[in-house]
Length: 201
Image (tube, rainbow, N blue to C red; front, side):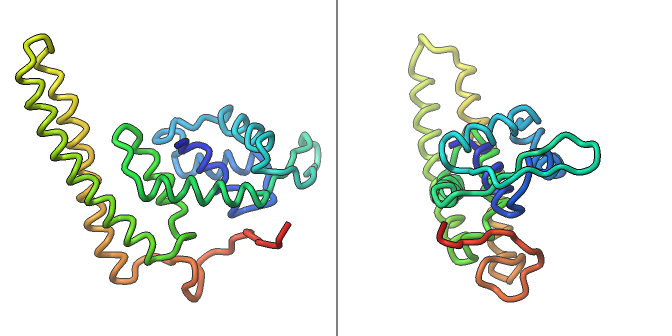
């Protein structure tokens, strides 16, 4: 899955209708350029491709003072569906080589509700434990293969070590979530205003 597509769709969903410069500024404030390798050019490219694919639509032009006119975007019904598909895929499924997927999913996890996030995290812990078993078998196979450089085993160990770090974070976060930390959809007193509107368009 593309963490960048999820980040752009999710940010537009919160603030819509919104122009690209605002999306860029918001995601830079999350330091997404560092953990998702999301540079300004890729944000504008994502807005264009998501519009071309029917997930975003233009929602007017904003022109203030002497600034260049800026196109505003909002999600289409297909965009809402795609956002939820990407979000659930990133939250429920461990991506050993793309840690940005979980970071992007956590950014919007409040949309799904507390119970689903808790269940998804429990599922991730099981996946990580299974990956550990797989790593042990893979390393044992490498040790028996005289044609493979022995140091390749450390690639497997490094990936598993990262996953075990994720598991430690999930375990601690689960405890906080079960104690009522953070706000999730359907709970009273939201701490922020989302411009998401399901108006049946």
